[in-house]
Image (cartoon, rainbow, N blue to C red):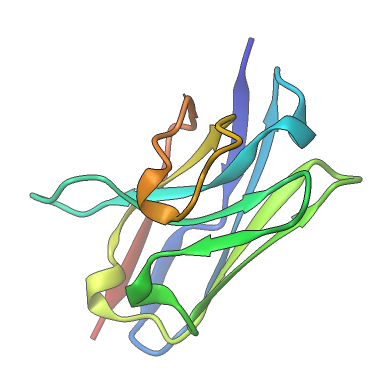
Length: 125
């Protein structure tokens, strides 16, 4: 059974930082790209950042490049997303997800096969 342990969401002021973590189980960690989608109220879910567990390649949505950093700890089977310089438009539910597609070219081609329950990130003025 696939399961995700997610943590790190919360309320932060604009310009602040948060770190999300995701520890999946139930599949082979190294065979998947793991990362986060987010969904803001009234908007479609979008891929934010992913990392290949096999080779460490990273993918970012344009609007978060330079502000968010994704990393992976293979020994702990855990992926982290450091969110810096947060903006109000980053407010959303962030869902950890995994994708086994080995032909991923960019962030827009990531669809997600397995999903966590999500954690809320709220950025205030």
